[in-house]
Length: 64
Image 1: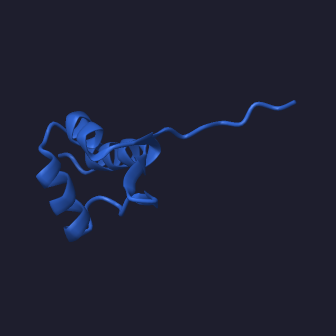
Image 2: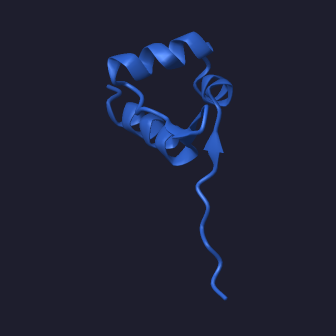
């Protein structure tokens, strides 16, 4: 049996912690398109951690 790779889903508070901002800023960045919209599971909003790491990598590439 092959192992399935799992892309963990994280909450807005965890996204905020990783990015060093508030939960309000996370949602502000979703609204302005900086962050991708979360995956909805019932009443929960979750982001694949790979989405957040991709945003960080993109920001690094844009530095002077």
